[in-house]
Amino acid sequence: FSDLLERYCSDLEGAFDARLLAYDITGEDEHLCSLARLARELERWPEAIEFEGGIYDRAALSSPLDEVLSLGRRLASLMLEHGSEHDRAHAVALLEDLDARAAHASLDDDVRAELLLQLAHAHADHGDPTLAASLFKTALEVLPVTGHEAAWRGMVALWRDALGDVESAYRFQWTLVHHDPTCEDALCVVVDLAEESVALDSCAAELTRLGRERAGEDRVRLLWRAAMIYDEYLSWFDRALDIYTELLEVTSGDEERLRLERRRAFCLGRLGGRG
Image (cartoon, rainbow, N blue to C red; front, side, top):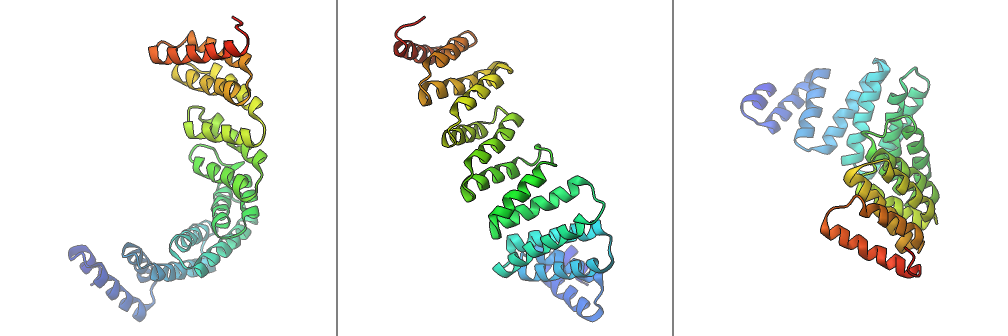
């Protein structure tokens, strides 16, 4: 009857009530899974958490570890996103328990790392930031950067803001820059962190190196940023002048060339007219 209400009448509330009655009578796992799904679709989060918890508890008794980990991580995500403060604390404890199980099993490194990453996010938001920082580092040393860029950004922010370790945040940010040197957000952050950690000279040198390895607009964008560090932050006008001169050789747009000529003239003026 529940299936009919859901399929033909689009009556999810009615289907939920009918399925709940069937579960109360039979206690069958099939009804529990349907109740969890319907509760999520209806955004009845306390009930969704309750039923997902029931599914996990049953699986934890006898199911294979990979299934237990999958169900546990799904329950933890639900509690972290939609649960009460008590639920969120329970989610952190659940993930820690799952990690303890995983640590003593023969799992692929990336499976354990994904679990550690979820635990890191949970601790960053609802637990221990210092532990979260360590967990992020451990997990991201295993996982590829592609697909985990947001986690790297979260780790950088955590080391910078929660732990106050700007130097480590700066080192981690370079992973994102090397992964995609054309990402403007990543470049802005690495320059900000370089300024905070008194590393602008090495930052400009690395941006120059990366720029000269690339072509076209990517080359221009990276060299521009390096030149601006030398020019505006460090007042190393000779190095800025060399890059502006190099950029003039590969820049064709009138507006950009005019901008380069002005910056080059400014540097020449500060150097006493050399060149």
